[in-house]
Structures are given as structure tokens and as C-alpha cells.
Image (tube, rainbow, N blue to C red; front, top):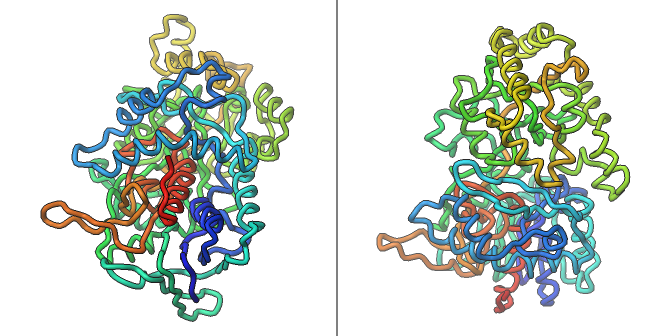
Length: 539
């Protein structure tokens, strides 16, 4: 098999790269390990939020944003190590390119974003997003992938496109002096194959689909990895091409920097081993440790610092947690990230979506209570704690701890403003933004007898994104290992895009993402790589 360009991986970054190369009349061979129905990869299951700067959507909401402000927020939150070079350069490049070459470009493809933005990752110990920047694709990642798949498959030059499914690429043909193809296994027939091209683009995602690799590269200051880590990544994001790049002396960096989530529950109909769902943790719920003690001294509240949530849970002897709430809070605040459990938003049904926001998503709460073992309800705390211990198979949860946590929190609400409890302070802060106000209870007591029954959610760490990856320059060209003097050079013919490249440069996020930069990073790296292959530059 021969082509001008081989792209390995048909996720979001891969299909955009292929489409852009067809625009250049290149002959493209797109190889993916999954089946044809999964063209577009994990993005199809994503909620579809993207980070952009100073957009029309922001200005319509009265949000004043700028490149300088976004740069300050990004570098504060990323907390880059001093020695990081390409990650910092890519962060700057993303901020400068994202609005013109992702926001406007996606709208030109026929996509649009919901009128109200989400305000996530506001920062805790490091400043985060000082303004809302999370633009949600109207239709979720499902619509994003549908539209972009259609652009690829119905391209006027699609006679130049060859798609191979169920093919696992394991090796790069060549060395640090140049790559001229790939090799692997056709998993339909279990026969080996080779494909040749002057240029190879790696778009295979990160390593977080391999829980073994997540454990191997676990951030050492956090101690041993949790006993249970659920899988929220693509099942084929296994790092095969990371290893192949290392074999030819290419640079792979920052694999210990991962963007995992603190509130994972088991999927009630798993499509892969240890399949997990990523909750949007209710802000008004009490976050308890494995014994039922309220997590502290800083209470855990979502939308401020996702990394802190994971870090704090991993400081416990047993690295999982509980959230305690009641049915009233659940109806208002309970949500699951992604397209699968946001049908009204996914299907672009505006009024049903608004109804769910205003009146609560009772259907989803009842579904998860009925079908997922990790969410349980009871009329009394005594009964609830008994169920929690039965579920876990031990007597770790203590009723006294749970009662104390509920009593202290409810009393803090009774004391009124100014609130002394930091969780209540953050709820009050979040409710100042209308996107959060409609989805967050107004100082709702846990023990309110009219708001029952009580609900407990057992939550595990969920593997999600690799912030590190194959190191590239600003044209997405894969770099060699640094020599003793620190010198690196591009490997001729080899590019990396999307999560495979740590969304840019092998790690443009540092230790933390401002969110929305994953799908956005796939769009930007794909378009940058395609332009570079055509000897052009996005400006």
C-alpha cells in the first residue's frame, strides 16, 4: 500500500488532518484499529466543550476576554516546570490560533456553540479561568464528529482517500534519519501488513486507555496508584505509537502528567473493561472519604481545580470517595459528562434541554439509581450507611462521621452570610454566573426532610487524558531525543497530532488543563500539521 501521507488513528485529529490534506489533493491512507462505525473516535462520546478566546459568544454574554488574559490564566494554571520549552511554545500558539482557526473554522463547517458558556477550572491554589471560555458544541461531540466525518467521506477528492479499519499499527518504518511508512497487523485476518508514504502522521490518542500504563506513569508524589482506576479513555489509546517513536529515538515526554477525574462511576452497560462514566460532581453534595469523613481541610468542590480533587483523594489510605446528597440536589445538579447521557443537548432539542436545566433531569437520576451499583438511596442516614458498607463489602463507613458532616454543613447554612464554610462560599461564587446559577442549588441542606431520600455515590478515579506525549515542534514535526547539549531536530517524514502529541509539543498544558483544550487541541494540531505538510503556516 502506498500514499502521499499515512495517518494512523481516525479520531478527531486524524479525520481533520485527512480532510485538510485532501484539500491539497494529497493521496491519503487513514488507518484505524477500530471498526468503521466508530470513525471519529472518543470525540463522539464527548460533551464537546472547547476553549476559545475573545469570541462572539463571549461578547454576547458580556465577557471581556483577550489573548493577554488567556495567556496569564493558562501559564498560571499550567504551572510549567522551568525546563519545559515546547509545551510553553505550544500553549502560546494555541491561544493565538484557537479562535481564528478552530472557533471560526468549525462554524464555517456548519457547527455552532450553545449561547451560554460554562465556567470551569476557575482555579484554587493557582489562578485558572478568570472568565468563562468553555464553548459547548450545540449537539455535543456527537454532532461534531457527524459533521466532520461527513466532510471527510463526501470530500470532492475522496477518490484520493483510502480507509483501513481494524488494522493495528505497531511500528514505524525508518529511523531518526527519516520515516517512510508503517507496519502492523490486520486484526481481521491476523496477517502482517506494511504501508509506505513519504509522510506519516501519528494521531493515535494518548496512553490512558491502558490502565497498566496509567499505573506505570503514575505521578510519583501521589504515592501508589489507586487500587481501582476506571477507564474513561478510548479502549485503543494504548501508546503503541509512543513506543514505536521511542524505538527510533524520537522524544516522548511528560507521561506522568495526566488529566484524570475524581468522580468516576462504573458504566451500567460497559463497552470495555472497567468502563467508567465521568460525573459532573454536584457542587452542593458533601464529598466524603472512604470512612464517611468530610474531605478537608479544603472541601472538595468541582469546577475549581480538577487536579486538586484527584490529588486530595489520593492522599487517603483508600483512594476512592463518596458524595452525599439528597434527591432535590440530585435532580438539580446531577449530570454525566458526554453525549451519551445528554440526549436533549445532543439532539439539539432546545426546549427539552431548558426544561431539564430548570426542572431537573429526573429521568437520568432515576436511571442511574436503578441501573448503576455505585449510586444508592435511603430514607435515613442509618439505612444509607448500611447500604454503603454492604456495597463496599466492609464496615469502613462510620455513621457518626456521616452524621457529623451533615450536621455541620446544615448548621453553616443556617448561620447565613457571610458563609464561613468554604464550600458554601464557592457555591455562592459559582451562582454569580448565570450558567452555574440555573444548575446549582441555592444553599440546600443535606438533611432537609422535604428533600429526601438521601443519596450516596461511590466514586473512583477515572483515567481520561494524557497531557504528555510525543514531543513536536510548532509544525507538529516529531523531534529526536535531545543530545547531551540539549540539541533536537525533526525526524524527517514524521508528525504527531492531537492527544498523541500531548495536544501540542508533548505537553502544552503543563500539570493542568483549563478544559476545552483537548478537542480544541485536536483541531489546532491537525490543521497546523496539514498546513506544514503543504509547506504553509497557519497565521
